[in-house]
Each structure stands twice: as structure tokens, then as C-alpha cells.
Image (cartoon, rainbow, N blue to C red):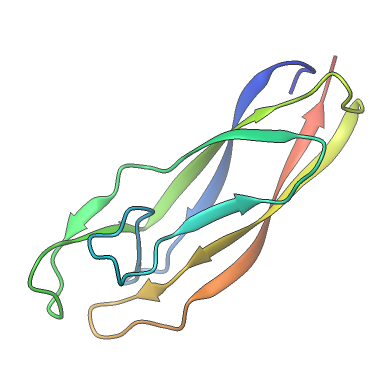
Length: 121
């Protein structure tokens, strides 16, 4: 990433076959959204873009749910300020989600995530 530039970076997510997570905009208020947050640091996340969710029908719900399943990317636009040091660095953050299948939901989980970034002039 060039100093002074805003560049998109992908965080790849993999859901196990048969499982889904509610999207970042769940269908009902009681559902736990998938949410990516970044820790403060030298690099500045300016926008987080989630993929378009799928509307899926499950036996436990009368209406379709807004979910992510399979493999997908969350894209963060990162601004590299003029004060950034040249060389490799990492952005760290948290991904919160609740994995479910057609019969049950697992407990909500928050996992540490990181993006390796190479800052160049």
C-alpha cells in the first residue's frame, strides 16, 4: 500500500459446509450480525464493505434470513497516512459472528483477525 493512498484489502472468510452466519444486516433485530472491527493503529480503516447477503429459507424460520455462507470476502478500504513506516505491518481486529445450521445455532463467537500489509513509498 502506498503512503497517502486509500487501498482496498480483503479479509477472506470460510464457513464450514452446511453452516451460515447472519449477515451484517440480519433479517430480525434479535439475530446476531456478523461484524468486523479494527483495532486502532497506524493504518486507518475508512470503509468496511460486506458482500451481498443471500436470502435463505430455513425450517426454523417462517421467512427467509439474510445470511452469508461458503467462502466470502469482507473488503476494508485502508488509508495509509504520511506518517506510516515503510515496510511490513499488520492491522488487527475482531470478527464477531454466530454460526448456525438448519437445526441449531452455536454460541456467538469473536475471533482475532489480521491483515498483513506492506507499506511502500
